[in-house]
Image (cartoon, rainbow, N blue to C red; front, side, top):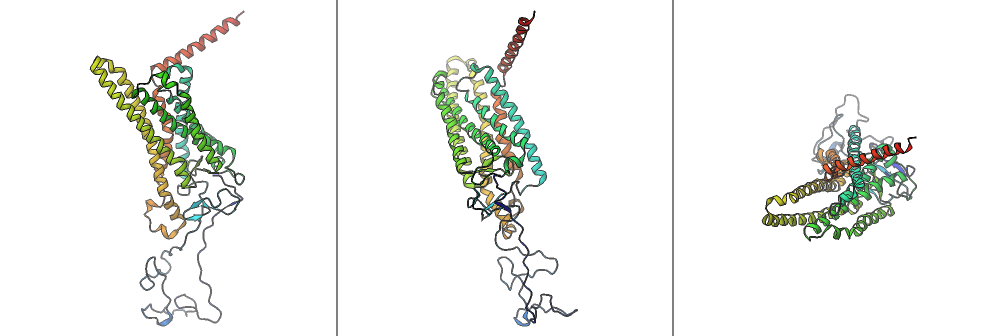
Length: 441
C-alpha cells in the first residue's frame, strides 16, 4: 500500500471514559460507591425522584426510565457512541500525503486500510500466499507453453483464432506480476513508503502495470476474438480479410489499457491490495474500483458475449445448410470446431462473470464492513456473517483471475502441438550434429 510512514499514524484504541472526581466537600452521587459507610445498603431505585438516585445509562433506542441497569461487576459495557478511525486502520494526518482528503474508510475521512487486511486471521493470510502462488505458477507455465507453441509455428495460428494467443500472452504477464509479489513479498510490494504525491515505489508501479494493464488488455482481446469469429461465421469473411484489420485490433487492444493505466498513475490512484499484496487500483476508493475496474470488465464481457453468441448462431445455420447439401459426414470438422470454440467460450466467460460478481459483492458490502469496525454501536446491529468479508469469495476471485490463463492453453492442446515441438527438437538435434561434424578434424 502506498504509504509514507512519516505521514501516517496507526489509530490508537480510544481510552475508556471515566467520570470526573467530585469537588472537595461535596457528597458524591448516590450509587457511585464513594462515601458510603461499610455495610450500608444502597438506596433503592424507585420511580420517584427522591433520594437522589442516579438514573441508569439508557440502552440504544430506549428512554432513561425504561432502560436496564448495567449489572454490577459483570455486564457488558454500552458501546461508545460515534465513529473513529480505530486500529489497525491508518489515519492520514499529513496534507502532503496523496491520500489526504481522498480516502474514506468506515464513514471516517482520512482513514485508510492498513497494509494487511484487518478482517482476516494470520492463518488465512498465510493460506492466501500459498493459494495465489500456486495458481500464478500454473498460469505462467500454461501461458508460456501456449506462447512458445505459437512462436515455433506461427503459420498454424491464423485469424480468427490468433487473438487467443495474444490473450494468453497477456495472462503470461499477469502471472509474472503475481510472481513478483510472491518473490518480493507483501511488505515490499504493497506496503513500501514512497515520496508524497507519487504513486509509490518502482516495484509497486511495475506490479500494477503487469496486473492491471495486461489484465485489461486480455479482456479487449477477448472482445476482438469474439468479433473475428462473428466476422468469419456470420459475415463470411476469409482469413486474409480479417488479417487485413489486424493493425486496428492491436491498436485497440494496447491503446485503451494504456490510456486507463496512464490515468490511474496520473491521479495517484495506485494502492496496495491488503489481501493479495499486489498494487492495483480501487482498494482504497470505491469510485476508482467502479470506474477503472468494474465498469470496464462488465462492458468487455457483455460486448464479447454478444459477438460470440451471434457467431454461434451463424455456425449453427452453416451446419444446417451443409447437412442438407452434403450429408452429416461433411459437418464433422465444423462440429469439432464448434465444440472447441464453445469449450473455450465457457472457460472464459464463467471465470470472467465470477470475477465481476465478486467485485460487485466487494463494492456493495465494503462500506458496511468498515463501518462496523469504526463504529462500535453499529457492530451489535449486524449479524456475525455481515461484520467481516467472506474469505472464500476473495480466494475465488483471485483463482478466477488466473484460471483463464491456465485454460487458454486448451486451444493448443492437440496432436499438432506435439508435432510442432517434435519438429523443433529434431531441427535442434540435427543442427547440433551438423556443427559437430563441421568441427571434427
